[in-house]
Image (cartoon, rainbow, N blue to C red; front, top):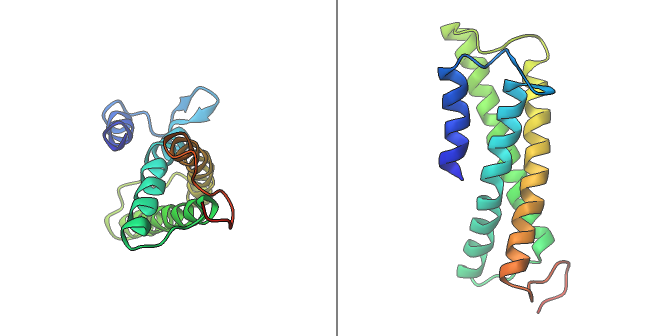
Length: 136
C-alpha cells in the first residue's frame, strides 16, 4: 500500500499531473486523499500491534483515534516542509493561497476513510476486538 501511495505521487510528478484536473478533483487533491487512504490503515494496524506488545489492549475506537491523529500530524508536518521548500528553494509546489488548507482537507478525508478501512480490516481479522471501552 505504501508502494502504491508513492507511485501516485511519482507518476503525478513524472506525467506533470500536478495542477491538472483528475476527474472531479485536481491531481494534487486526489494525491493527498489517496496517499492518506492507503497509508492510514497500516498505521491503525501498527498502533494496535504496538499497544498489544506493550501489554495494553485499547478499544478499537481509541486505537483508531490515536492512529488518525498521528497521521494528520505527519500530514501537517509535511505541509510545513512544503512551505519551507517554497520559501527557500522556490520550486513552485504551492499553487495558491489555499493550497495548504486544501491539501490538509483532502489529507483529512483520506485519513478518515483510511481509518475506517483499517478498523474494518482489524475487526474482520479479530472479531472479538473491543469497539468502545469494554474489554474482550
